[in-house]
Image (cartoon, rainbow, N blue to C red; front, side):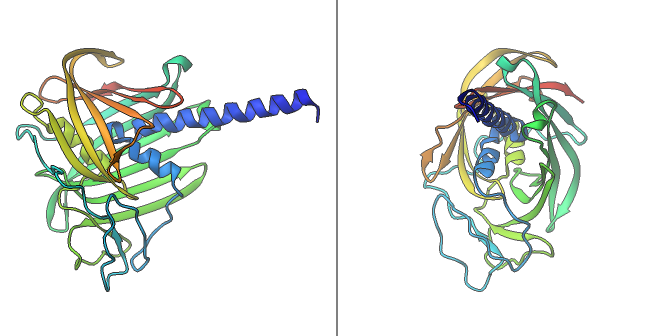
Amino acid sequence: MGAADGNAENQERRTNIMGKRLVVGLLIVAGLGAAGVWVFRRYEATKPKTLFPGEASNVIAPRETAPVSGVPDRKQVGVAPPGINLASGAAGGFQPRTGETLDFSANVPKLNSVVANLRVKVGERRDVAGKDAWHLQAFAHTENPYRMVFELDDEFDSYSEISNLTSLKYEMHLNERGQKVDTVERMTSSSREPAPANEVAARVLPGTRDPIGMLMYLRGVDWSTTKEVKSPVFDGHKLYDVRAVLVGKGQSVSVAAGKYTTTKIEIHVMDNGAEMKDAHFLLYLADGAERLPVLMEAVLPVATARVELVKSR
């Protein structure tokens, strides 16, 4: 093979790698909005295998804890750093609306085309382990022609407690390049509670949220009186500490769904006590009773990703 052919092949390889990074970067934000960095870490790590009761699973946590003796089917998720605020700033007047459906498009502005789409749905209320919970869902799909680079059709199901949106159960149904992986994890803060059939028990801190529940929780914060909230978030693989900070009020934002006056929130994600530096996240919540997440942005090493609301119903 000649030098010209070799250079062309290398250039094509670099283009494909860059394209995949762009798609994954967008799906970070699209898949989980303000909490999207957890999806990014999932892609960086080894793909999770399907887990069933009785299988041991090691999870790197912000702080390691000793294994729970006699409970082999339980993930050791660890504890949060001192000072973590599990449920501050909640606004009692906001609740997710049953049947709410939010459609988003994800793009990199310089590509001038939609890379992926996201749908977030609020389902019916369900009983989970004797507790009243919201069934929240997120669906992420790459769009042509980017599916040739990274084909993805994923579903995430969150069962989050009605009162504070803490996670009771989290499911990931992943279909990526034809490879399907399903995990169902029951959150528990007790070392004695067994995992139900076909589920894995993940021992977490009281007040831990999953990424979809965290997005809904941020919509419910009273940002008129609260400047910052903190929460542990478990993504089905690892525990992170999340800090959401108010950085602006009265921000005008134009998206496909319309023009909104918004509250601007900056998201900081801590891993092992250090802030993750490879992405910077912003969430814009529309003023008004519904507090719609109308725009989500991530400044990534390769590009700036933008996820905007297309339709709400």
